[in-house]
Image (cartoon, rainbow, N blue to C red):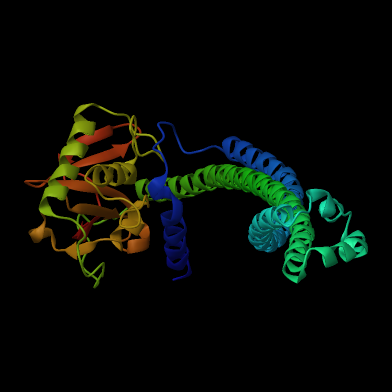
Length: 400
């Protein structure tokens, strides 16, 4: 029982990677090859550690760029608010300037009438010239006594004119100042936005760089690890099957067909009749091409017995997770059991030296008519043979 458990555990481990492993055309991996794979993996690990340091430094840079972008965004929002205020002030000042300019224009018309009246009454413009040339409100007040000679109505007109002129000058100055503030705020907004955009672009470049480094690192590590694990597992499977075959060759009193002891397999089949026919056709092609038998291989240039079964059904469309590269004994529990009378082309046949699942050492593909396609041994190679030509046939077939 412990041995069977080990076999089942090995099957589970093998199924994780061997289904997607490229086929090799040489014997089972050597210890030297496995050691070389370990060294290659160690080198990748060293490179990964160095890349991790660079990754940490890049992450630090990324944080700085993020802070810079956030600060620039804050300045941008502040500048936008300043621009909105400045724009509002500029519009209000411009409106006020326009209103005062209109008032000045109206005052000019009144002054024109005033001058005409003065002339009609016998006066001259020299009487009001000091008022027109007054330098500011105080000077205007100092000159107001002249209004006594022009009458109350004319005095009011002149007073309004000078006041409107003063207000208009102040409004224009305020409008000019607001416009200058607006221009500064606009420039500030543009500058702040450019800083934010530049920082964002640098940040995105750094992110892309990090992703590329990370993807490359993960891929290289995975490849190195898969190579090492695949070589180790292929060697374990080949050694196990080789050991069982050697034991079978030295075991006497093997039955032609073992009795049924209630062996159980899968409850369902995973293939169609067309897929089984395709697997048979593939196996036939390899046998007729006189491909050699080499332990631990599954094509395309050489096969062992379970390697031929695996490659045949893989060519028919089965792949991980429905189909794995196992050994002969493990395939017995990985297929649906049918009696020998129910065999159909494509079913698998199993051979054991003690009539138990754990002592199955050989597997073939039923061709029909009592014949099979098999990768027999180093000496015989790949064969088309009778199903009873190998001792120890199990009392069931396995339908994939």
